[in-house]
Image 1 (cartoon, rainbow, N blue to C red):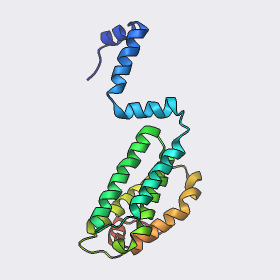
Image 2 (cartoon, rainbow, N blue to C red):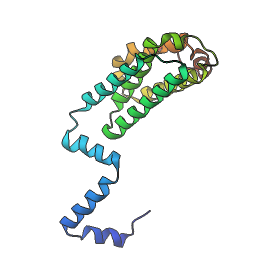
Image 3 (cartoon, rainbow, N blue to C red):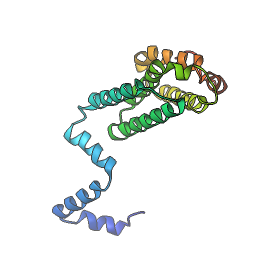
Image 4 (tube, rainbow, N blue to C red):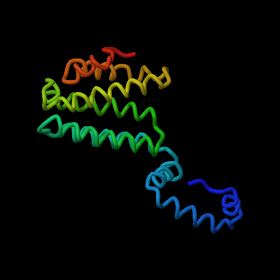
Length: 182
């Protein structure tokens, strides 16, 4: 809903104390905005690596658990993708987004390789999910500053190798996902 010019002017003319109260009430209604302000104003952006490390620890813990099917494993990966998206909304950490996405898939491939080795009806949805997310990751990398490619090259190469030798290989071929990067 657009704010009229008259209302904007009236709000600007409010006493500072009244504006502060209104601002605090409005901010408290938006969870993402509260977290972003905590990150920027209280943590001064200094906790970005701690936040990444926390997500990595949780990914590793879940990846090491026994998963009965690729479907259950995919649900965990999707949940972590949500955590990564939330991390980026709060911190604006594009580098961390790429780093965490690569880490997520490599960790699951390394710890759940038997479930991801063969493409079958049970692994099909997970295979498609991994291939689509790998494709999205490659698009994000293409938009990223090439000076940082060296940071991701080794791990991205390993991820592409997994994608082309495990259950997502048919989807990777169909989608034209390269076998090497950059």
